[in-house]
Image (cartoon, rainbow, N blue to C red; front, side):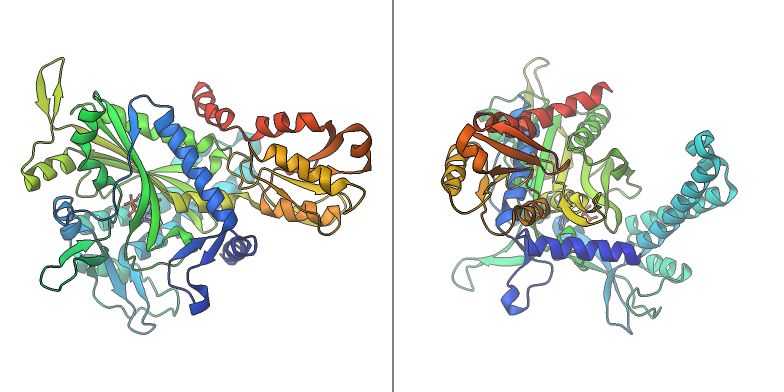
Amino acid sequence: MAKQDDDFRKVISHAKEYGYVFQSSEIYDGLSAVYDYAQNGAELKKNIRDYWWSAMVQLNENIVGIDAAIFMHPTTWKASGHVDAFNDPLIDNKDSKKRYRADVLVEDYVAKIEAKIEKEVVKAAKRFGDAFDKEQFLSTNQRVVEYQEQAKTILERLGKSLEKEDLADVKKLIEELDIACPMSGSKNWTEVKQFNLMFGTKLGASADSAMDLYLRPETAQGIFVNFLNVQKTGRMKIPFGIAQTGKAFRNEIVARQFIFRMREFEQMEMQFFIKPGTQQEWYEKWKETRMKWHLSLGMGSENYRFHDHQKLAHYADAAADIEFRFPFGFKELEGIHSRTDFDLGSHEKYSGKKLQYFDPETRESYVPYVIETSIGLDRMFLSVFSNALQEEELENGTFRTVLRLPAVLAPTKAAVFPLVKKDGLPEIARNIIDDLKWDFNVLYDEKDAVGRRYRRQDANGTPFCITVDHQTVEDHTVTIRHRDSMEQKRVDISELRGIIHAEVDMKTWLQRMYDVSEN
Ligand code: ATP
């Protein structure tokens, strides 16, 4: 735990020190769970958004993108169920006065049991060596089987109690498990209460005519209310999808964990409209497709897993999370939900307008079913950034901090250095920048010894450093150094564009989605 905390602290301070993420309104001591993306962070975030948009919209003929407003008619949130059901169960500790999500306290308890299982697996793998069969071990080792049973029973009970809104039983469960406040160790809990997560605001000048609005808690509803507009104007045929990225707002009860859980965040969502009855097949397909998108970034398949939901949201008939191994353990990164016809059906009811698809082949009209893929851009940012940050021991015993961002996402693709600030070298370096800047984000740096400049760019996540030296003046060659291998090659200036392009080109990265499927 201590190491995890330490690793996470390093991620947060590195994000600040290298201009990725700042606390919002820091000069006023910040605003809780609100963050600003700095000069490098804004680029990384944009690159992640583009990577998602290309994979979802550009590469799929039957998916189009929209950009709906944050403000929506208030009835939207009645229809979507958010006014009545977008609640989290909260519990306060009477001694520490700290507030928690009751379900998260129980889930964290279960995560500890899961950690014990993982520990047993690692121990056994060491003991049995090559002969180790994980599946067999999980199903036969007495202690591990008991742990698994325990975890399952707890989660099932939590799921059932939440579904029935039996908050007294959630409290009873917390007491039975002897869960203490992580801050104070106290077990003196209040009752569990429901808390609505939507932020309210007002539209209009005078108090009488003002209309109560909400800041959208998800981008999905902007897609549903536009379903027929897009279908008709785009002449879309089912199955088809509508994608969008944009801000969402939630008054989260517990908002620690940096950009993992924010009160203002960005989502990347896609709603895929299908024929009723085909949802199982499309749900599986999108689970698989989204996992491939993640794997294409090469951040290690061992860092992802699916988690199928026990407790389903009011709109879903199946739901799974793609979880990522964050510095504080496996947590939800993306959700894939089979939303049935809940949203369109409900908007039909509340608006009195038909939201149906006319199938030109069968000549029937129906309310389509929907599969949703929903990922938080900020969480994706955290997964990429935390996974990339590494402390590496070099051959000479010294250490370097390197941010191994997937090159396609790196904010700056190359840094260009003149070896010294004279003899015409800065001018050549500037010329190289002027040439490359049309294709890539590149930067110029002439301060400090070249070794220090390399370290700075390693920590910044820049895939390439290009150094102009005296030989360049004679033969038009430079050295290009690779961030990850630290290998240096002497190449002609005319080759630079091709070398950088081969490494950062989005097409090459996205094609890995399809390679993964063939393995
Ligand atoms: P959680 O259980 O962590 O609260 P959720 O299940 O409520 O998340 P969804 O409503 O499915 O989340 O939202 C889809 C995605 O939006 C999540 O997978 C996550 O990546 C992102 N997300 C949700 N809430 C936040 C938040 N407060 N801050 C940052 N990202 C968020």
